[in-house]
Amino acid sequence: MKVLVIGSGGREHALCWKIAKSKLCDKLYSAPGNGGISETAELVDIKADDITGLLNFAKEKEIGLTVVGPEAALVAGIVDKFESEGLKIFGPSKSCALIEGSKVFSKELMKRRGIPTADFKVFGNAGEALKYIAVNHAPLVVKADGLCAGKGVLVCDGISSAKDAVNEMMVKRSFGDAANKIIIEECLIGEEASIIVVSDGKNVVPLASSQDHKRVFDGDKGPNTGGMGAYSPAPVVTAAVFKKIMDKVISPMIRGMAEEGKPYKGILYAGIMLTKEGPKVLEFNARFGDPETQAIMPRLKSDLVDLMMRSIEGRLENYSLDWDPRPCVSIVAASGGYPGKYEKGIEIKGLDLVKEMKDVVVFHAGTRSGKRATDGSSTFLTNGGRVLNVTALGPDIKDAIDNCYNALGKISFDRMHYRRDIGSRAVGNVK
Ligand code: AMP
Ligand code: GLY
Image (cartoon, rainbow, N blue to C red; front, top):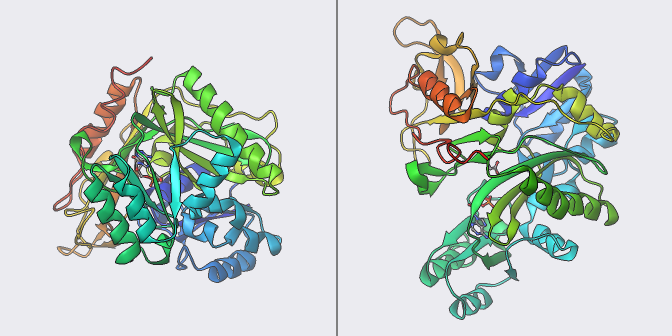
C-alpha cells in the first residue's frame, strides 16, 4: 500500500525509516519531510497542518495509511476528516486528542478516573491565580491549557517566579489564547520516563520504555528544549514499575475514554514522574514522543505498518511486539544558539563517514538537501534548531552511548552543539 507520513522532524524520519522496511508499504510519501527523509520517501510540499491539502493529496494518490507525526493536526481533527472520507489514518480523533490539546481536559479526566497526577487547580483569570500562589509554597508548576509547542510549562522554584509565570501567560498573553485558562500544580520530584502505547480503542500494546533529556546543557542545566537526546529502555522502569503504570495509568485511561464515549485509538504517550509515592502523570500526548521515537524505532523488530493497521481496525487483542533487547541511544546535534536564535543553511559534513557504521543510524530533523558552496555538489544543509539525531544500538547502554558519540564525532557543522551526557543516568541504573 501507499503510506503518507506527516511531519518534518527526527521523529518522522525514524517513522519513515521503519515504515520503509515494512512488507506492507510499497510507496512512501512524506509531507513536508526533510533532507534525510528524502532518501527513503518522496517529499510532498504540503505543510503538516494543511489538513485540506493533505486530504486532497491522500485521495488523489489513494493513500492506504496516513501517519500523523506532530500534534497540531490531530488536535485540529485531521483523523475525523480523513475517516469521514473513508481514508485510513493512524491516530486519535479530535475529541481524544484533547488529552494533549487541553491540559485542563486531561487533568480533569485524570481526576475523574483516579489516575495519579500532581494536585492542581484551574484558573481563568490572573487575579485568582496570583492570590492562590500567595498562600502556597514554592516550587509550583504553571501550565498553559492549550498547545504551546512544548513551551507552555514553567517549573517555578520561587513564589515570585510563579507570579511572573502567571503574568507572562495571563497578563502579557505571551501564549495567546492557549493560556486563557492555566493550571497551577504541585511540583513532583523524581525520575522521569516516557511510556508510549498503541491502542485500538480497547486493547493496548506498549512500546519499549524510554527517557528523554529536555534541558539544553549537560547535567540538566539551561532552558528546556524540544529534547536533546533519548534512550530506550529506561532502566528506572523495572517490570514492577511498568506494571504499576499500566494498571494505574494506561488501562484506566483507555477504559475511561471508552466509557466516556471517546474510544482512544492511536498513540497514547504518558510522561511519568516516578515519585516516592509511585508513578504520577506529568502529561499525556496524543502522538509519538520526539526524540523518544528515534531511540525506540531501531529496537522494534515487528512491522510498524501492521501495528498501525491493527490499531485502526480494532485488531490489537492478543497482539504483542518483538524487540531487540539491546539498548538504543539517540543524541541531538543542534544549531549554535538553539533553543534561542540560530542560523540555517550551514553545510553538514561527515554524514557519509557514518553511513556504513554498524548499528548506527542518523535521523535528520532540521535539514534540507542543498549544494556545496565550493563545487556545487549535493549535500545536506542545516534547516532548523535540532538538526540531526545520531542514533546507535549497543550490547549494553554504555556501549550504545560510546557507539553514538563515536559516530557523532565524525559529523560536524559550524557551531554544532550537543550534550555530552545523554544516557549517563541509565549507566549503573540497570536493574
Ligand atoms: P510537559 O511539556 O507537560 O511535558 O512538561 C515539560 C516538563 O516540565 C516535564 O517533562 C517535566 O520535566 C516538567 N514538569 C511538568 N509538570 C511537572 C510537575 N508537576 N512537577 C515537576 N515537573 C513538571
Ligand atoms: N519528548 C517529549 C515530547 O515528545 O513531548
